Image 1 (cartoon, helix red, strand yellow):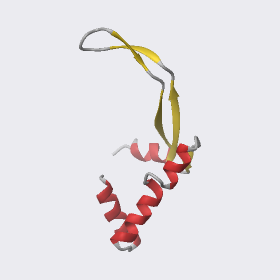
Image 2: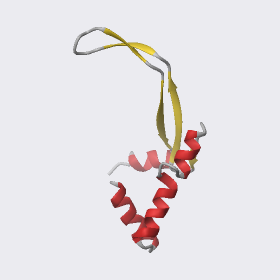
Image 3: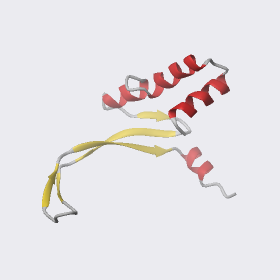
Image 4: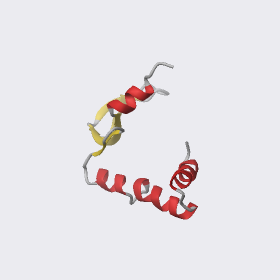
Length: 96
């Protein structure tokens, strides 16, 4: 699902105009939205029944350039991790 499709679906389900649906989606997921702001502060976002988003720090390490085989230094980084909640996992793993 793309952002455009998400906006259309939110608008349809809530009976909102496209501009209001855009505002809802951007408030939650935009670069200055609720999720981004909380994660930027280093917090976790827990959505009961859905899952949680958190940041994981990766330490600096040595790697290998696959083209040349030479060793390279890979800097420390931060990655976003999503862990689904039990209701979502059960829904996705339900037998058909």
